[in-house]
Image (cartoon, rainbow, N blue to C red; front, side, top):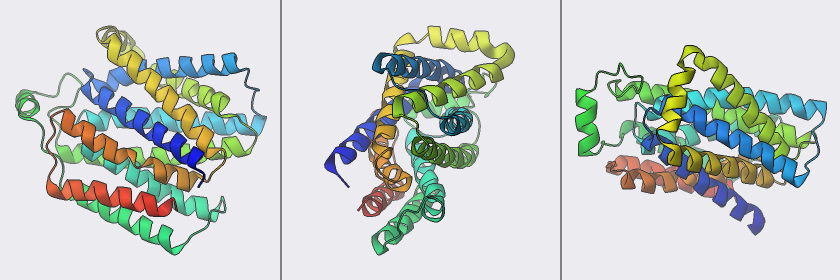
Length: 298
């Protein structure tokens, strides 16, 4: 893989892990993600206009919209999982699980090649996911105290069992795999990265806002109460998606998504910075997923 593509994917991985960590620190992630993604969509549209990016073909447009629908589901399930489980665990399950979804379809439908290294890499990812699921992070003492006293009625889901968070993270992985494949198909049918991101994020943002219903005012107040996190998270999300698609335009969806999963290590570091204390088996899981990603990208 060319060094330029590797650097683009790694930049996307760092941006993605960072905005996920910011979302984790937000008050009420399930509402904060709506404001964050609205800003990301606005940034995507402005980038498209400034660069003078041509409009995609009708086929590409359809895939852009499909990606947006899947991303809307992704944002909702990601925020819900983060409100119930630690960042390190959620991130590993979501990113690694998406990889297992994307590779078979990339091979059977998009014609990506399977080698011994890639087969071993997939096995390592699966083993890493099993290890991570078996050894979830222990929350920081302060967070544990809050969780033990919370009723869960505020919508943040702090009193929800960790098992529920892992189940939602698994569902989120399916949506992640789906929107990556839709992105690749949008690019292959004539879409340019900035336009594809702008349409997909705009679709996802509109759907998320519509789904709020009477809770829109509460979501607005959530965003207004923490503007710094919303702005930085939204900018990083938009940047991460555009850079990812710039790399995916010249490489396979499976390889790019796999290499991007090195973000799991970045997420583990950020999780420790947030006060989470990973168990040894959980750390081993992150290492296995990353090792598998490296093999798959060869």
